[in-house]
Image (cartoon, rainbow, N blue to C red; front, side):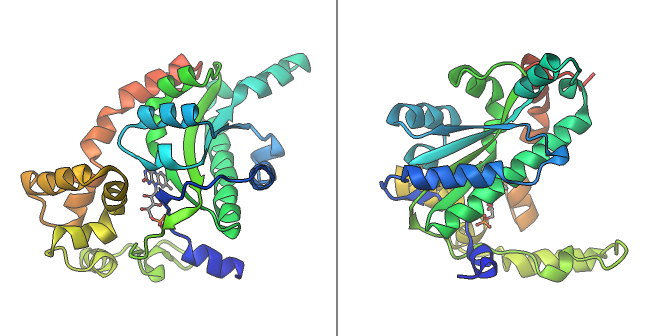
Length: 280
Ligand SMILES: Cc1cc2nc3c(=O)[nH]c(=O)nc-3n(C[C@H](O)[C@H](O)[C@H](O)COP(=O)(O)O)c2cc1C
């Protein structure tokens, strides 16, 4: 398959087979992570692989509501690692102050996502599937404690990998023209914005399960693995929150924006606990 076909067909996979990922493949995934672009070629990342039943169980328990975390045969925790860089700088008689510089952090986070996405695409080429689990960012202290992660190391992204049992085929995307601005930024009008998202999601007013297939696939995939507990809860919330359109659905139920704002304090404290101090 061409790289284009592979990337255009890629979908996040959340239902995995109980099939081990061979070490020679894991080595290759780590090689492409290590070979990714990196600001200044500093390579300020570390990856914790989790494969044992015990590790997967604990990681799954920490994350909570996402059964694919426990069911994936291989998980990778991508960390920003300023511990190693700072030690090296100190040993080399110079200073590295990444923990105090937002710009060092932002570049390192970009590096980390380059590494992770290299893994996603290469995994796909080996017939594996994967899904990012960003919820790890709300559990920085807990993950650091369980995985013995020292100060100046921040676990920032989790990638769950395994052989797909099922692959969603109903994930809608915006029309390419909506994200394109030729030469200068062109502000879309209200009607154009509304239309762009109507084109993406289609009608809202339909059977919730059909709607979830395209707008909340997680709950459908979770119900395949954990009974329909999450599906029932989502349907209940849909009614209780009186959701009548896609944006309300997204920012009240699937990615609740008030909850995101209220996470600030915990997240900033977790950064401080890890020795990062650029939020003065
Ligand atoms: C930064 C980031 C965080 C994500 N976090 C989660 C997550 O916590 N749980 C999950 O099931 N999927 C997660 N995803 C996967 C998205 O839900 C998925 O990419 C999106 O629905 C589009 O589907 P696609 O990947 O099949 O194109 C995350 C993706 C990204 C890029």
